Length: 616
Image (cartoon, rainbow, N blue to C red; front, top):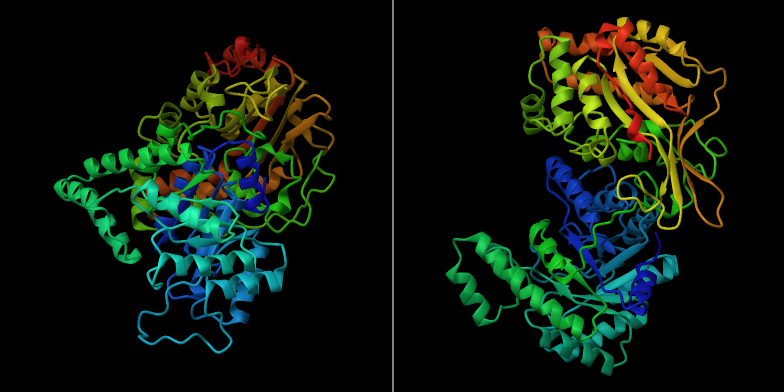
């Protein structure tokens, strides 16, 4: 749940449940941002308590908080919260910034859903040997903590840094601890330490902190050694020398980064085991924007807890503003970040029933490329062409969809954020049937099978935790040529319980067999002591908005090719002529419908969209 991290830390400590958190730094390029967001998604699966994002260099560097700059600290932190479903803490340094500048930054952070700050002095500008803080500045981290509390009261959770070996600018560890206590007394909630190389150093530091009256949680910062170069760089920045036996071991393996990483995992794992036995509440890992070493350590410790059951069928935001949201249109099921971005400015979010508080003011897709391979770089364009090739006919496009379904060289389609199919498709008979559909030009982009009263903790279809039951209607969404579409409509007349919506790109062709614009719940759950939850719906009012986005993605595909090329003409033909269609049914009549189509429509020959054994 969103909120101040100290509450989550205390809850874990009281339950004696060790936790972990992860630190990342902002990327230098948009392409690096795409990779970082993908990494955040992958690391989120291990259930970190939170992530924190480091600050831009140079104190009050305005580029670090420009929400329009995709590589800024604030942009990364708010994306982790709003689009990756992670609680995030933003580093904030005060060196070189005035009080007004700090206040403006904090207002921006609050606006974008950030509730937690790591308050640091930061490094003075390297170009000034005798640096003097601004006249209306905040010289030390203690002043920053006081300012946050003075201006924002208890709104922000505040963390401060501790130095088990003493701050490089302090004459002793004892003097540094005195200043640390001042930060805590000024209003800090908890402490994260800088790196250290042995358990004894950390435990002695904690004892000294407790002796002077520091009682808040102290979380050890763990830096896995991953290469000789990274070790040299970080020890230079921290002015901390590694023990001779570690330095000598790394030196012996300096040409073998894999061996160094394995050694780093080994010693970090043992140190964490010793710290757990000493009663530490959790760990904070300095990832260096990598994932392998940290994940291996967490797995060794049994702290990597791959989440099996989702809170809801879709990705939840960690923003306080969206805390009550529990209903969304199914159209964005494969593009949850797109939906989150397009609804970020809504004042109210649907709760209980779609339509009660839904907003028609969907925003545009500006900035969505941050989360996909759609960023406009030469490397991204080349990667797409490598996957999708140069289609010369619509059959070539069909083959691209098939190769995505089967995992043969196509890891992504424009309509799917993830680089692999959802387990609802791959773990059911739908998998083989979708391959047949796409081979015959029915280009599927979204689906779910029938589910009838499966346990809510089911490995594939479950959501919402234990003790409940989940249900789903059959749903499939696809692009279809106008010729096949007209023949399909004739067959659908024989199956009135099947509902459908279809539109072409410009909206000049709109077909449906519904007389009402009311939403149709296609997923619901029953839990003890609660009303029925209906988290996904087919909403006729939202469908035209999704339709625009879906066809716009064809246009993005087409821009890979020269305007007068055959490939561009093929993609433009599909975009201008095909329809986007969804079908929903409450029964297995969709199976029988498609069995009839085997006889009446040659292109459907042999296809069964939803096999009879899909229902338990």
